[in-house]
Length: 257
Image 1 (cartoon, one colour):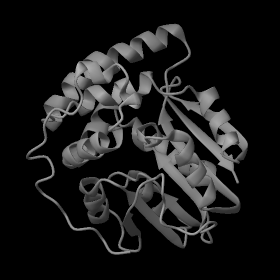
Image 2 (cartoon, one colour):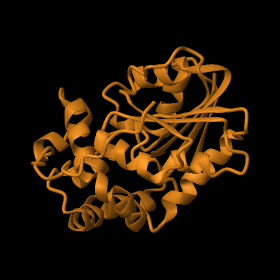
Image 3 (cartoon, helix red, strand yellow):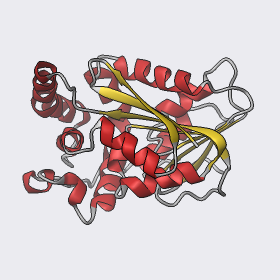
């Protein structure tokens, strides 16, 4: 796979993609795929900066823990699905015993272009839809997805694809935001994510698409950890586990084919 070319004008003509009415049911929008793709192309240049700032740097620790749970080794073949700007991909690439194959895919070229710039040359890249991955069944031993599954237009189809491209005994790791189960922590988190973060992130990123209103809204309206585990089992996985991090703000799912 070749490294994608850079589009420095990804956000110059971005317009409002998520208004108040659409945010009531972000996962039910019939054109969600197109909206999400344009949104990520627009916010790609500042995406990592915003993540670091508004997670107070915790996003790095979450990714390191997710990668550690896979017990990745030199013989492994890793596919990072919906890789964004490549944070999870780089975490795999920095391992002492680096997997022999690491591939990152995303359907947003703005994100993928930056990922290719920031990650070691030994990593391969490809533009791909998570619901129709261009790989033969059993091609990988580890599949990963960090903060991407809630953006799938069909969650169950995406999990089935994740399962399909794994060989027997392969592991899938998913890192995703969740709503804290503790009532007080949930209230605090949702005030921060719905009021403070959208305003601050839009200011830092100069975003005009409504991305930082969509992102917290997509968490509140997404499936909980128990339901996600059920979907993973329905997709054919076994040994499914859910590990909450940072008071349940995020959850790491691990499953075996």
